[in-house]
Amino acid sequence: MLQKIKQYHFLFTELVKRDFTKKYKRTVLGMAWSILSPLMTLIIMWLVFSNFFGTSMEHYVIYLFTGQLVFAYFTDSTNLCMNALVSNASIFTKVNVPKYLFLLSQNVSSLINFCLTLILLFIFSAIDGVTFTWKFLMLLYPIICLITFNVGMGMILSAFFVFFRDMQYLWGVVTQLLMWMSAIFYTIDTFSYKIQLLFLANPIYLYIRYFRKIILDGVIPTPQFHLLGAAYALIALALGTYVYRKYNHEFLYYV
Image 1: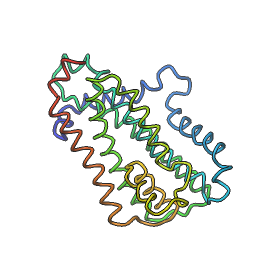
Image 2: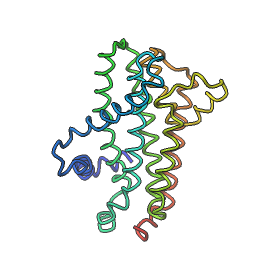
Image 3: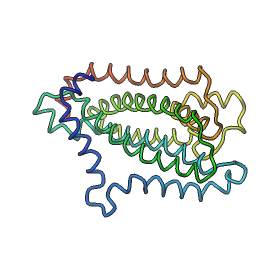
Image 4: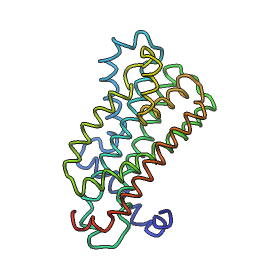
């Protein structure tokens, strides 16, 4: 895959530029929406839920922002990747190029938005009095896991979307369910220990929890936590690669 990306470096770079800029085409503020959109979502959620949880939780805005940041990257990446093959059918049906390049370019576009918003999170954390330590470097681990997980899920979703256009509606329902199961705006401390363990069955919650442990608790998660995060990412990537290899030649007949 890396050799193919190097071989088609120019095409891949142009795809990333196109995918990132066309999102804000014909908008007055342009790429400023990369920061304004998650910021306004955060403000709305903070105003709605602060009366329920904010009074009893220190650094509640950062707690909320962290969950929103990770979940927004996941949903944005998977939604864009799901449509990657169908929206670029006019290209790969005429030119023989690796189809996963279109999916990866969408993921990179989402990653750029994620990184811009991450800077905003660090600024808010500093204003809110969060202590910055060397442990913040460990955030690279969940970010790498999340990128890998999103690519794998994007491969699966984009393949299914070629054959079943209903997938976009089903995935909308699934992401809504995942949002409520990811403890973005509430804490799971009031649940029993067994229920808290069940939350770890949700990969998105696990990555959110990793961010919160580093930023808010100043604690590096256990080795088991790291292994579970890597397992989710690698399983998703393996399944996505398998689906692409199996149905690669059939995509041309359905797009």
